[in-house]
Image (cartoon, rainbow, N blue to C red; front, side, top):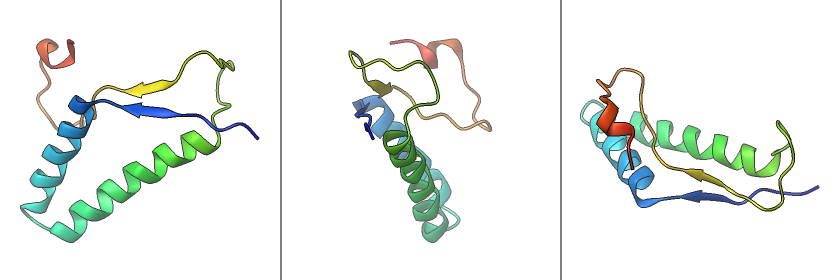
Length: 79
C-alpha cells in the first residue's frame, strides 16, 4: 500500500493555533479533541490516499484550515 505525504505550511499551522485558542476559551479539552480529530483525518488521508486519480509526482499541501462559522473574506483565501 502506498502512503501519501502531506505538507502543512505555516499559514495552516497558524490557523490550527487560532482554532485551538478560540475553542479553548470555553474548553481546552474540547480544543485538544478538535485538533486530534483534524490530525486523525490527515493521517487517514495519508494512509488511504486513493480517493482520486493517483499522482506520484505531487503531494497534498494544506494551505489553510478554515471553520464554517468564521467570516471569511476573499483576501483570507489569497497567497
